[in-house]
Length: 398
Image (cartoon, rainbow, N blue to C red):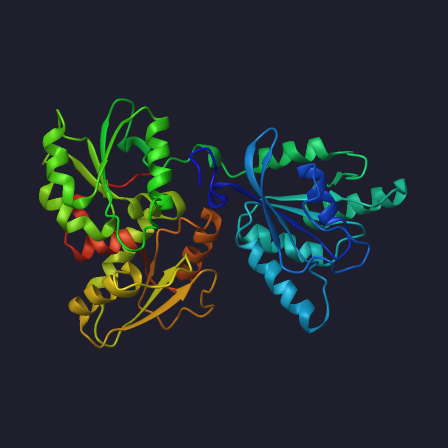
């Protein structure tokens, strides 16, 4: 990934929803100006949701999600509807298409409202003025939405729809900062980055790349080194760094060597606030003190990489947890989009930095944990707690 490329997880996710053959794929193509999705007169052409990273003129980087019809039928149809429901959890702005009076559409709109997801109602394929008026009135009365009239084939309403999507984006979506007030112009920032077996040779991992890019945009003075060269790097600097950012696995080592006046945080803790709820994660870390050998912990990873002998989530965190709570502590693991619907059997959930997920999806997991009454935290926060330095690290406040 180049410095000029916006990761998909950081783009506005726009979900296109509706019944089969209502014109969802045609709308996606109209929004992108290219044949992004397969268009067919046969109902049910779209199977799994199609995620397309695009640059939409007027508001920048986005992901368009073309979903299967939520009225699909049969065994495979039910599976496709479940995929569509999964896409709901990642959607920042939902566009629901109508070509008749709403039935299932109203139920889906209510589900989005419960998730606090903005909904835009769009009417497509209705050319009869009287019928159009009836559908608009029904949408208004049943759903409290003012439906827009579009025609993707002629371009009618597409520009207005793009503007409405931009206006419906979550507040401050485009201005969320990884480092917040921790770093500003001319501040000296030191990045201590262990290049372990999980870092692909010749490349930096995404959290490091994204942090560097933001610091450069802020006109910070950025210095980087590996953990074993931290002392030499500090000696080469004319002043102590204002902030040191490191990998969570190196917390203890870096804390021992850092200048007293330098603040310390980790890439994972920065992402905890950027992608999730940092205060909820800080609160959740308190559950570590209540863990026993009879406790059960769920560790969730966004990436689907193969675990290694140095793996933070699969090896290091469980080892530290068992050292604190007892060797009998049970630890379950999930990867990617796998996440249990029933969380009631867990005493703590620990999530990775989630650099591959958008914030909407991470917050869905936070809310699921809250609903189940299960504490949830983050790799970096947990490792700082286990290393007894959580009160000495900094994080971006709301």
